Image 1 (cartoon, one colour):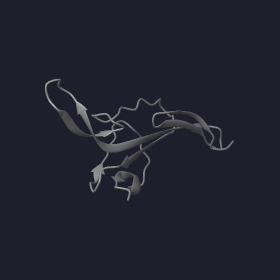
Image 2 (cartoon, helix red, strand yellow; image 1 turned 135 degrees about the vertical axis):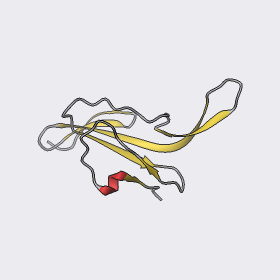
Image 3 (cartoon, helix red, strand yellow; image 1 turned 180 degrees about the vertical axis):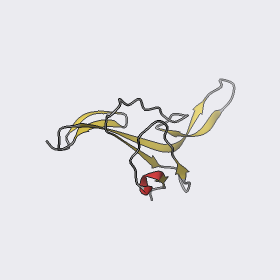
Image 4 (tube, one colour; image 1 turned 135 degrees about the horizontal axis):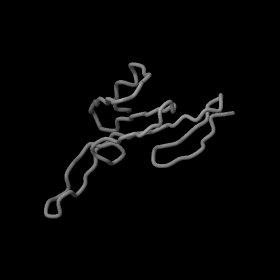
Amino acid sequence: MSNALITSDHGFFRTVNVDGQNIDFYDVQIEPFSKKIYPDLGEASFVGYNGIVPGPTFWIQRYQQTVVRFKNNQPDTNCSVHLHGSDSKFTCSTLMCRHHR
């Protein structure tokens, strides 16, 4: 079976690998945005993840193969991302978010 798209929703999709196993894939954009928090004040500036602050929580079933890709869209700013409660398999390149020019 090919890597066919099964479902897609706001930065999430599921593919099927060559062995027929589902792999969940999350695409998270790190970028600045503004939002009105208090009615009597102006908009506040944030750096968030797909437009939310704080960062997302991923509830993933045990043993479900999952890829989470963070892309830093902040101009001229480095960032770091850390995970809690996961058996992560990653390379040095996935530990560092860099601005894509």
